[in-house]
Length: 242
Image (tube, rainbow, N blue to C red; front, top):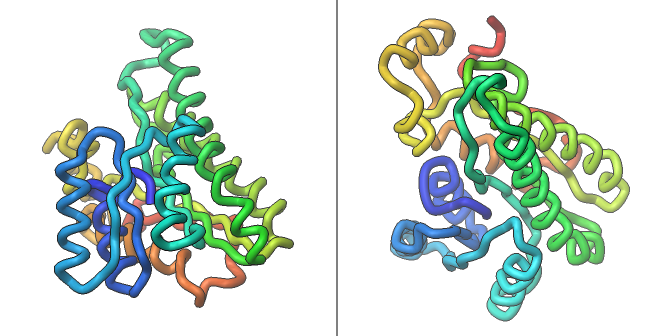
């Protein structure tokens, strides 16, 4: 799982391990946090390893696959959660490098990790690919044009892959959280004056937490999900209805 050292990624890693999957906790810079996730999983009786890799770089991803391959074999489930940097600005204040750079990073990471795991999945005739998008891909918010545009591109990328990879027995789905408490993004951008109207617009009366999102990812990763592909699951407590 990419971007698995904190927030949604860490919650998903712990849940998948609790459901008896071997979990690769990928991280870029937060080694201590990733090691803690692994320690938590192992303490609960699960199997996990932490592997550093910049998932935008093919050579780094190949080293990750080599390390996992030596220990466990090929990857059956890809959960792509890594979040590349982006700016929060209006379009008029933004440079092409800031907008285009975010779209490029998002797609480069998605392409790189997917391209790396496909050969083994194709050989087995089975695979699960789940991408973490964001409600911003469909619900614009001021200042979030870079992230929203990049995630919209990732969502459409997944739909094309679902069409192409279905005959190989590989499902491809998107999990699209709305605002999520207890994440780095929430701590950075979810001020109380922003949080209150979002809660008010959510029929469930609260915002999501990382486990809410992890449970949906786990469904898409499970053997029971053999026929759903090309879908987008909005995890937002009903906020998208408004």
